[in-house]
Image (cartoon, rainbow, N blue to C red; front, side):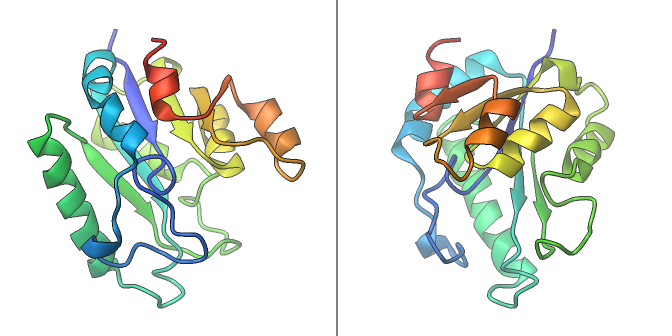
Length: 176
């Protein structure tokens, strides 16, 4: 049975820049817990895709080309370390724009399934650090893993939509 891992980018794969966006390679810092997880990710998942909301594009803070350059660097960097990311899906739209690709909507998951028809959401896992990541995974019927702290602000949505709540991706993947 093939398993697919869906990952959020900022806050899961790389350090999230609070109040800002990763606009170039020099701002991309891979999270240490993600690096430690690489061997286990390879063992546990046949496909890995990243699904990321990048509204900095619509805000004019960065361009689609900036984001694509960062992503190509990330793909190459991870490949050198033995981790193949099958594809990165980006929603460039503003929150509230009504698009079908911005998480928690499932457009990026449906695109991944169209690109890779063997993806079965029932055998997929979504790992993210936001309520919208958990809602996205739940709407697709995936196992959901929340990384981070449950706060008064996100408690209801996180508890309703998360199968696991952990402090790091390594904590989750090392238990698999």
